[in-house]
Amino acid sequence: MYGSSSDARQAIPNPAGVSSFGSAIIRVPPDLALLRLGVRSLKDKPEDAFADARKKNDAVRAFLRSVGASEVASSRITLRQETRYAE
Image (cartoon, rainbow, N blue to C red):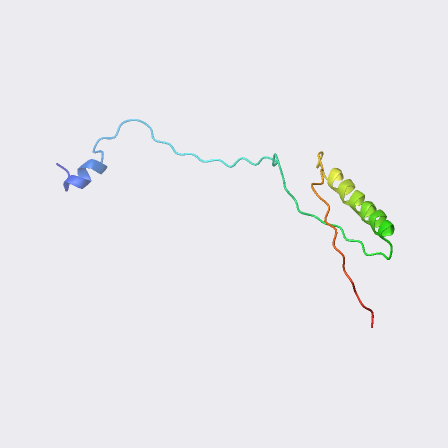
């Protein structure tokens, strides 16, 4: 036939029909985004630190809503005591 036996399996001597190839890229907004954000507040009194952290947290939530994040939720609060000494 035509060439070796492997060539005969790969070649079509009299092709008939149509061959086509296509590809596409579709860009869509994400269904879910997980972000790890944090606010920090260091104050002398715990109530002042909580009030400041709440104010900062509200600002972060307001920003996220302004850019289209309609559902914003907090999953946890972490408290950590730090001691710093001034020289």
